[in-house]
Amino acid sequence: MAALDGSEAPAKLKGKYAAMIVCWLLGIGCLFSWNSMLTIEDYYVYIFPHYHPSRVLTLVYQPFALGTIAVLTYNEAKINTRLRNLFGYALFFLSTLLVLVLDLATSGKGGIGTFIGVCAISGAFGVADAHVQGGMVGDLSFMQPEFIQSFLAGLAASGALTSALRLITKAAFDNSQDGLRKGAILFFAICTFFELLCVLLYAYIFPKLDIVKHYRSKAASEGSKTVSADLAAGGIQTLLKPEAQEDPKQLERLSSKELLLQNIDYAIDMFLIYVLTLSIFPGFLSEDTGTHSLGGWYALVLIAMYNVCDLIGRYIPLLKFLKLESRKGLMIAILSRFLLVPAFYFTAKYGDQGWMIMLTSFLGLTNGYLTVCVLTSAPKGYKGPEQNALGNLLVLFLLGGIFAGVTLDWLWLIGKGW
Image (cartoon, rainbow, N blue to C red; front, side):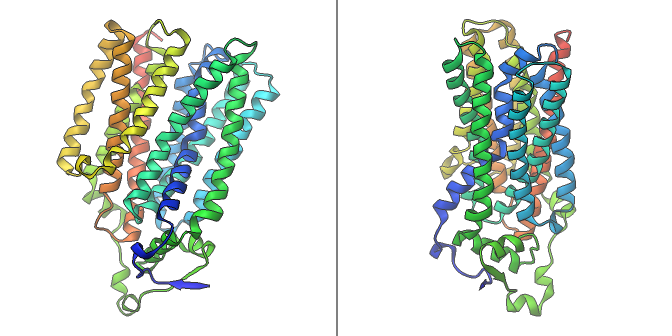
């Protein structure tokens, strides 16, 4: 086996753009299953008309995601990252396959039993998300910022892709008998295939890229124990630097508590970004927007616009002069987004669909832009193991914000009188 101590210059290593493409695809796979379930909400509303599926499925998903990421973050330094990520992608694949099996077994009929089954699969998606999103963000935090940006762009691309596929399948089957169900089945068949592709990409392609092996070797030389299995998969045997062997203090790292205290503003940033976004998207946009000329297409168009603008927002920080890195500036921008709450309320009550589409687009654009700015700025200046731990901590606060946002989203429902 080859040996690296992480000292080779990244500029001389091959595979940067291949790694960015693989990170983008893995990002899509991280949320493709869940976004698919959200995007076919018109089908679930049709077969489960009394259960508020767009809200309930999200509320089921989030405790599993948040509880799992809390445990994984606490034990982050001891966890085999390769097994963690492979388990997550494999669980996505199996759970998505189960959605198909459940629908075919019940012939697309509703009922409380079927709904409980769908909720259980939603919970499995939450467990898988916690494994993959925290594991990948932590892993990529000690690599080049372009890698984590590509992964985050992939997360948004999964939403844009599922929205585009849903619009296509709705148009293709809109006038056919049982068209909603046919579109949903095709949707999840594509999703199942893609999740299997992600398992293979992470298992056999990503760990063998030269630049990925370089950064993982560098992290291992700084004391990281989470990358050894991935390095072995890439044919690398890790060796400590001679100076590290002579001075064990070089392998010491800040604790998770110390990292959190030093980066509490970034953690609050992630929480606030997603508590606002998820208090509006997707539940409010799916159910509380009244009747408009777009009819059954209206909720799909709103969700599609959010997802496309979220994706665009995640590429804006690639232009250095547009990237916001000031910690104070980020906090001000994130707090300013809360003005969207009254804006959405009054637009839904008094405005037309054009204003609602514009607001939804802005919500998505700022969500993507600020997420990338925070997650690429926070890890700078730390050792590899510390960057991995900080990435996991920030994802924990991200998922905490999502959970809080989903809970607040129920207030829209209560305000309507249930």
